[in-house]
Image 1: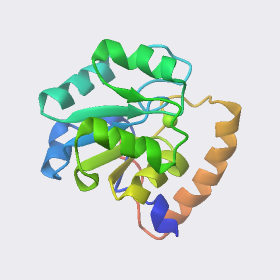
Image 2 (image 1 turned 60 degrees about the vertical axis):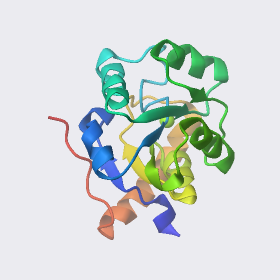
Image 3 (image 1 turned 120 degrees about the vertical axis):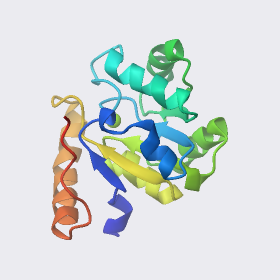
Image 4 (image 1 turned 30 degrees about the vertical axis):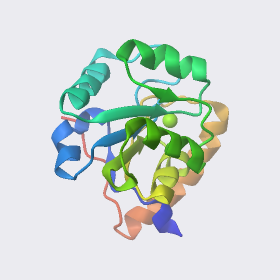
Length: 174
Ligand SMILES: [Mg+2]
């Protein structure tokens, strides 16, 4: 049961993962969460460091699709200027938005990574599909009130995973 929440990698920031990391693992497509993974949930724009990294991923041949529970208008407003497609109102961990993203990417489940900051939406959704999953520490500490309760439950699961040595502490940013 706990294995469904087990990410394949746990990192402090997306900037800890260079394109080669995915390519070496046979990954061709990335399904990336928006809020608190690519930008702070209150912010309207992606920081240059992150948007530059996304361009590096694309230049390396990786395909990207954002899957977010946020409104379509927010997702496309942020991602369209970068030329990256997005699926909004996803209600993760439902399968449907992930399947839609796979169709957009044109990649198979076993060659796609799901990257996000939440265990119960991003990691669970990706694992249910059989994708490679990456848990990222949330960008912003102050969050939507509903998310705060989820974080308490997340902490308990993460602690259990750490105890069973399934995951290590997140990689420190240099
Ligand atoms: Mg998120």
